[in-house]
Length: 448
Image 1 (cartoon, rainbow, N blue to C red):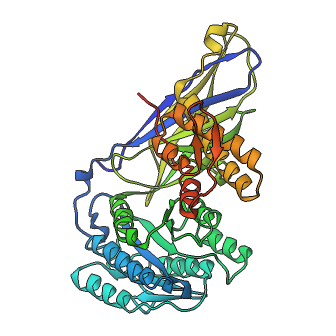
Image 2 (cartoon, rainbow, N blue to C red; image 1 turned 180 degrees about the vertical axis):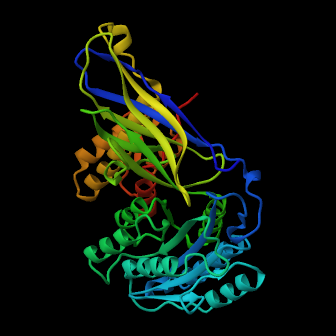
Image 3 (tube, rainbow, N blue to C red; image 1 turned 90 degrees about the horizontal axis):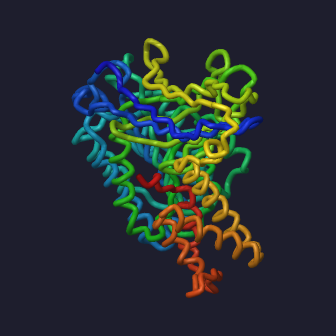
């Protein structure tokens, strides 16, 4: 197999009532690459065919003064970094950064990348063992240094130019971005966009969910809370295991629409909600690319595509969108899979009023994330009526979708009595509220 294959399945009700313009579809994309097609060997352990990727990893650790309160926090962060380093496969380029109001390379100290092996992993863990907390927090500086290391030393010695690189970072903080302006952080995020992906973790409850979500959304990563520092090592290990599985780099969702049609929105809706609409880059006449980042063999994601078309007459059919998966390869873009979104106008109400169950499910999941975030914001502002109304709706939507994870998180913020009435809990732990906020965008897939 010279390149990973993707299957593209389209779920929609293609029948539209007369005069209707909006076409909705859920597009399920699955990478069916065979892991055996990429035998270990060479950087990233992937000595396989061109188009498969090398890996590069950077771990960014908050070393500001607050990481000393409680004193065990920095010790757990050091242990978590060591655990993640142990998971990095032989041949993978990696580095560690310490972040305060500035950023400095911890390993290697010259700001390059090392190639993972028994000696370099040991040396990295020794360097990390010397980290001590002091100073402030300027996350934009940390991201800029990661960008510099990734781009100046893209894969360290032994880089294979015929391979595309998967660059991934883990960023840990315990506080707010107090030592630079929001504009400085935004500038740093913009520089890093499209260069590397970043999974963000907040430890404790003194950091800003919106701040880390801004980074993870732009850099196609995840965001989550680790309320107890003791949970960091397992979380870092899991993130690094996932990163080590990525084999196909720089995959884009390419969407073509006919003349006089336009994209209303494109959202990833599983495994988490991420609006990609504003991330479009032109890709030829009437087509645009939306970044999806790197993929692992067997990985599957769902996207909600909504296209506005010019209505046609009853009985007429049109192709509303062509959705392709496109990978960047050394020889240029390569199409890996394709699906078609159709529109067919009818005066048969029985056909046009059917809602496709996949579309209905994810429309509800998107609303669920929205009402949770709005409800928590209202609660913060002391508007209990709005908070209760929004979170009541969230309880109903979580139940309808079978989203048990979100239902459990909601139960720590609201209580539901025997009659089904939802009330805000008087006392809510900060960690429970932040967990509900950070995980509000996680979805469950449509029931089969």
